[in-house]
Image (tube, rainbow, N blue to C red; front, side, top):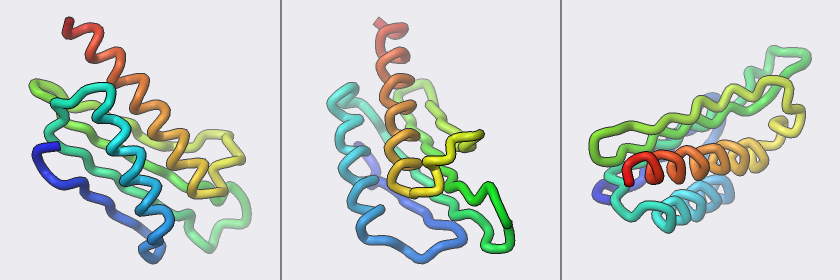
Length: 107
C-alpha cells in the first residue's frame, strides 16, 4: 500500500487482537492486487443501551487506481456478528471478492 493502513474503533477501546487481525487481512488483500493505494477500516461496537441486536459493524474502504471499493458492514441478521472477529472476517471476505471482481473487470 502506498499509504499506511488506517484502523478506527468507534464505541470501543482499541483492541490489539482485533488490530492484529485487521492488519493480517489487509496485507492479504495485496495478494489479490498489489496496486492498492490505501485501506481504511472502521470497526463500530454496538451501543450498550440496546437490548438485542448488538452486532458489530465493520466498514472497509480500499482505494485502487481510478476506483474506491467499499464494504459497508451492516450486519443484517447475522447473529455471529456479536463477535467482532467474525464481523472482521466476514467484511474482509466480501472485500476480497470485490477486489477480485474489480481486477477481472479491469483486465
